[in-house]
Image (cartoon, rainbow, N blue to C red; front, side):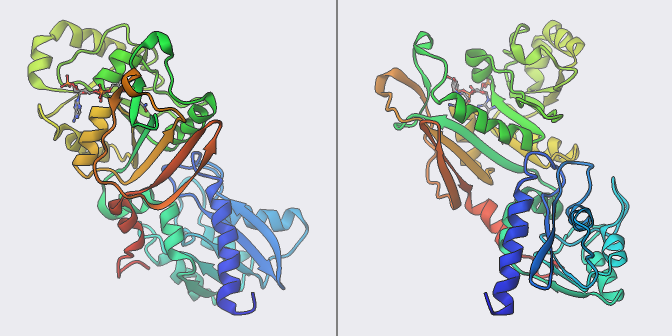
Length: 378
Ligand SMILES: NC(=O)c1ccc[n+]([C@@H]2O[C@H](COP(=O)([O-])OP(=O)(O)OC[C@H]3O[C@@H](n4cnc5c(N)ncnc54)[C@H](OP(=O)(O)O)[C@@H]3O)[C@@H](O)[C@H]2O)c1
């Protein structure tokens, strides 16, 4: 830990670990962490704790003051370029300058229109030394959805499923049990629902599993629930339609189905469900993503079943994959085989959750979006 580069990496990794705590709470904001170091001691730590709440830099400065420590002359490590605009909170650059921080080390620039190097420039103009690019790839991997949306205007697509060892997504005989994986694994998967602003399933999943598709606990998150239903087969008593006012529902269907089932359409509309009319083939997922992009939705979770996941993977739409593997091979007792085709997870991670194994990683597309840093990135 004697070379300056290694010292910077050490503290930036600490800031990245803090940033991770905000995942599932801050979206569609990026998760950001911050560490303030003075005379070789960490004197302040902070992270963005929730959408609309104070930014990581402000939290870290408050942490210093809470301990009666003065951040003047210190080095601040922050995982994303400090903001310089008034959003839900004031500009962080102003707070940093007022605190008389001597040096700011930033993992990666913020390519958003209102930032894009402007925050870094304000700090430099104020006489603060600024260094950018420490752990840059890790910082971008942490906030892939944010960077994808800013750079492409498209939502980040997460595909998640639970499977048996032999790739079955469901138990054939419903009386033999509804779930493949443990309660612990299912609780773990709710983090994904809290992260995302839209959760998508195929109509067979609604017909067979009757899911609510809400994050539990929701912690104030209200993702839109989307059903891919070209033939408008959704039953009026589906549980997904119970609380449409709180958790909106969008049904992706086709013009012929809307025309054939006008009475049902009317009843669904009265309940508050919305419709998206799209193509009568698998290009409907692309139309859905266009619509979600128009609504500024940054992260989309595709939850199944097997056919919908297959379509999304075949169309190369997935950026991030999560799978939960139950320690059982079902053979003839299983149904809905996953068949993901060729898929190599990049930057993989995972662990045991209850008796099940959670494995996640990025597709080539998601990974490249994070690590191929555009030349004009500040
Ligand atoms: N283990 C898990 O993680 C998990 C998660 C969810 C579900 N499941 C299980 O999966 C089973 C259902 O899976 P499934 O494969 O039969 O059906 P599914 O994927 O839930 O639904 C497929 C149906 O969705 C509609 N759809 C609309 N657009 C589509 C598109 N672009 N690509 C594919 N389908 C599209 C099609 O019906 P239309 O043509 O009528 O629109 C299609 O038949 C259930 O047994 C459920 O328990 C397991």
